[in-house]
Every structure is written in structure tokens, then in C-alpha cells.
Image 1: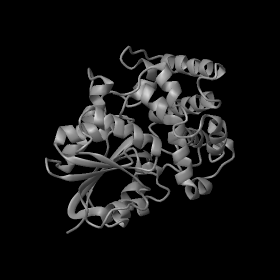
Image 2: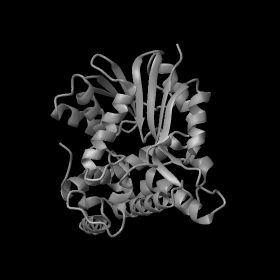
Image 3: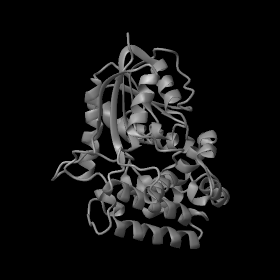
Length: 342
């Protein structure tokens, strides 16, 4: 089961980074980003190191706040956050026509929350691709705990250079993951290569929308906060993502920003002033308690030095996400469904 308590949060902070090296890793990670004098070129050329450090530092916070599935969702009125997250995953499986017997790839699978949900929903065998050792070890433990250790597996590798033969998978999906790629076309080309002809790839992408103005200082600040707090080399536009898929050789089946007609705003769980018992840890009050909890655990030397700084840049990300959502300049759920030609 997913880690839930304060001591679990403390024990997981830093992932596979040794306790004494966490502060140094935080400093190195921060230096990649605009807020600390970094630039896009450095983030792209060092994306593997940057993203690995990010998930070593942030995974324990994500699991503590979100559970096993680290993503947003289209949400109906009266629907809980957990229900919407599951439906969001099921919707992606339906777009791909997943069914028993298919061999599926989850690109950038995190600790495997969506993988397990989609595998049980569709009866498919899913391989989770991830370049972070800590997340894979958590995913393997969680797979075993629900009886999926034999039918689903994880592979540690870079999605820019996958260790699979051509035409291996019946379907491929990515949930808020390929946004970490330094080059969308290169990433999509690898997905195209390992996908069988005639089959589909579907993704929820993090993108700036047509409302984003690259010359607007406020928009630039929001974008930089999201990149810092989420380990992103750059945030592409919806048009760039779609064109990248076409340039990689795919045919477009369907594309839509699902945030546009979500009855409940996707950023609601993070919005200041909102209170929820079921999603308390995600609320501004819950995050305030978490920050102070982490601060206390660090002072007591239970959590490693630097943990409070991780909590701080994740809080900045939450603020940026809410502002980006309110101004409609950012979406975490631009859906593309594309097919590899026969």
C-alpha cells in the first residue's frame, strides 16, 4: 500500500540519494532553473541528471500528498479527486482500446499507480519505463502487494533511448511524463519505433496554451515556477507537442485540451482557501502543515538536511500551477492520440 504517515514521508525523503548528500543534490537541482540563474540549454543537456534528482527529492512528497498516481484529472461535479484520477486513467485506456492479452508500455511510469489501475481495468500486461531507481523499487513493492508482480514489470531506462526491439508493443501511453523529455520529437520517435504498426500512442501532456505570452513577465514567472517545481527542461505549447508527434511519423487520431471543459477546475485541489478532508494534504492548509512538519523533522535530524527546501520549491510549483490554470496559460492534460501507420 502507499506510504501515508509522517515517518514514511521522512524515511523516503531523498530517494536513493544518501542522507548526507540531499542538501547538495537540492542545490545542484535548483541551479538548473531560471529562478536560480539556470537556463533552458543546461536543463536540456543535463535533463537525465536533473529529472533523476527531482524525483529522488520529490517522490516521497508526491506519494504523501497524492497517493500512488501523480497526476491531475478532468473532474465532474460531485466526483472526488481519487475518483476523477481513476476515471482519467480509464479514459486513456479506452482511447487506446486496451484489452486482455495486449502488451502495453507506460512511458515515465512513476511508482506505477496508473500502471496498476489500467492493468486491472483492462486485463493487460504493462511494462513501466522509468529512469529513477527509487521509484522503480517503490513500484515493484506496490505491484507485489496487489498481486501484479508477475503480470506487470518495470524497466530502468531513458525514454530517449529505450532498450526494446522495434515493433514490440500493442499500445503505448504516457501520463504527464514525456514533458520531461529535452526533445519531444526524439522522444516520440522512440515511442514510434517500439510501437507495432497500426497501433496507437496516447499521452496527457503538460503544455502552455495559446493564451501564453512569452513576452509577458508574469507568464514567464509562472512558467519558471512550474518548471522548477516539476523537473521540466521546458514547457512546450500544445501546437509544438502535436507537431512533434507528426514529425515523429504518427498520424493524428484525436487531440484535445481536456482542461477546457472540465466542470471542476483541475487545479482546485491546490487552490488557496479550499478545504477538503479527503484531499487535506493537497490543500494550502495541508501543505502548510507539511512544510512545518518537514521543518521539524529536519531540525530533529529525522529528515535529511535540505528537505525543507524541497518542500519550498514544491510549494512554489503549486502556486505557479494554480496561477497558470486560472489565467488559462497552462494545462496538464493536453490529450493526444496518434497512430503508427501500417
